Image 1 (spheres, one colour):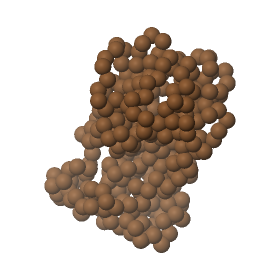
Image 2 (cartoon, rainbow, N blue to C red):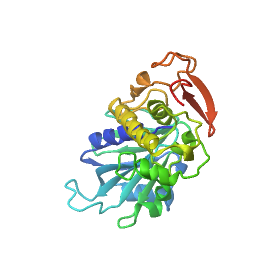
Image 3 (tube, rainbow, N blue to C red):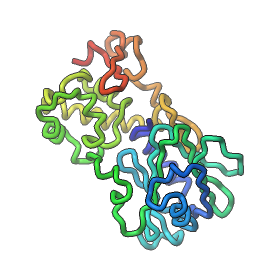
Image 4 (cartoon, rainbow, N blue to C red):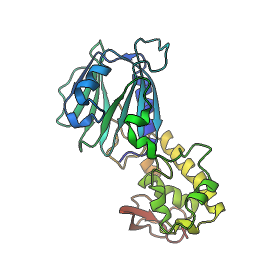
Length: 286
């Protein structure tokens, strides 16, 4: 599943490609891709003719302001267009007309015939139209459950210490909890725990404030490096040009089972925690 760096990479690609983009027409090839009230019919009717404004990200959710005109004099006067890629959703930009593949779910065209195509092999990705004036979370209800962004001032060791007090669940499981921190997932949880020197199975409530401060700093650093590399090659993720990211070659532990630790040479171990594959170095992480 795409994590924060991949979703942020998509957001930047959409912001770049859809600058002054008018949605001339919309085609829904899979109705279940539209999760907002009114379904495909209302979604198509609401987005047709709008101009796409600024793109935002919250956790793994994306949403764009929709406008009546290209100059965007008013803020989202036509509502918002929300997207969650889920496991395998991806956007593809096409300058020339091509036949859609069997996994194409939604298609958007501008007046010149250029196409933004949403492809989703597993069909779990979702889109929403949020009417103007309605809070995003009133329609995209998953937003209500999200914790702070890793890059925000609210995410720090003191916050984690308070939220994880007396918690017996593993710190790896805690990092996967989107209500604790928005956007982090399996890959970057493993990488940040390695960078912080914390064993993934450690009970979250046992960690000291200094360790949690270090973990916060490491998670931010790992995420920033991955965003700079365009995400990871380990997932089904592709950017708008169909290219996957380069962070995979920089990973210290993720999917390096049996390979020597880059810091000490100890073979990397793969365990199962919180139902997810977990990679770590038993020497460097205590």
